[in-house]
Length: 417
Ligand code: ADP
Ligand code: ASP
Ligand code: MG
Image 1: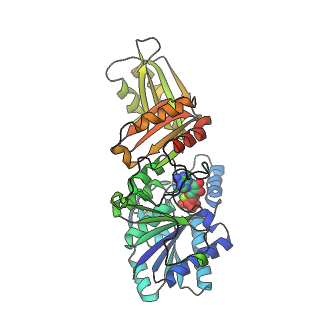
Image 2 (image 1 turned 120 degrees about the horizontal axis):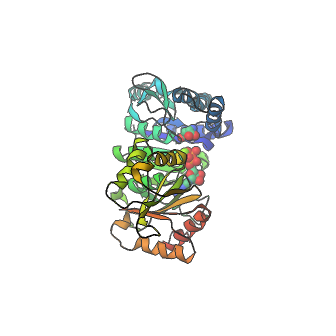
Image 3 (image 1 turned 90 degrees about the vertical axis):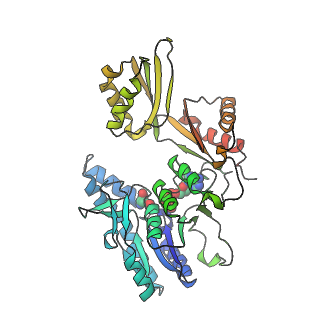
């Protein structure tokens, strides 16, 4: 019998009515003959509340206790869904991460899954036709046995990891939109739903700001070749015609995608900050003197631009860091001042990174140049640029991010007709 993983996000399990709706979706798949593992998120808003309580308790708290607290949201949903399923005559039981177990490393707050034991789930599918309802987002550190969590949005990753472990035919991600769009449909009403998207493109979209899937989940899907189908939980189970392909987006291997498009999607992120070091001495070793200490401080540098200073003698170095690390990065640079040698540091947190993604860029030249022209025509100033094989990003003033996304969306022919 084919196996299926069904994952439901926070809004999809926001209250008991929605949980009952989820249970009917599960029942539908059980009746269609699938062995089903369900992965659930915390009810909408719950994780935020738990995080806020940890901060209120102590601004600087033990990350292991943070995990002990925030992992509980998913446990409530898993238990409730199992109760509702049982009430509907579907044999089900809930599972917490430690009970399978789902083993992780010890990076509390953003742990990586190392191993998922699916053996007991499979035995129960076979012997008892039992549906497994698994708390997403959580695991267990392989040595200490302490509860870990996988980072915000981590239930997606739980779902894909479990799909790989039980060799599921597919991992369905049920959410509050009916698929992956060319850009965030909440920002651009003209965004179009994609029928299919390649793992690599989804990986870029997710890393560059589209929060519909957690980055790590796409990585795992690509590694284990798990077909991931993003679809809406708001579609009524009764309205689904099993003989038709439901509306949604399949995240799959590039080779399965026929119609080649140059640009597939646009992402944006306001989680970055800009730092500019003015009048840096232009000599060998300076970049190492700047970026070495930042790396030692575990600060991820993303975009880097170097240009000649106003005086023509020295150089200006601009780069971006996650906004959460902005103060720490400025501190690190200030401490390294004598080793680097510069005049002053400027910074900005009201910036946004807008990124254009598409596998077609590999074989088409001039894709980015078109964007620079269109943004200039809108008077949008570009502070920094980065490019790679299948994407490019521009850093602009945050106030223009929506205008920039809409402009580029139209420019690359992504608007729905
Ligand atoms: P869940 O709680 O189900 O995990 P999330 O809120 O994490 O749901 O992710 C779904 C949201 O992702 C959507 O409501 C949408 O606003 C946002 N989103 C951002 N970019 C995209 C995109 N390109 N396609 C679809 N949704 C997107
Ligand atoms: N509940 C967690 C969060 O809000 C995990 C998830 O929903 O995927 O981040
Ligand atoms: Mg999510």
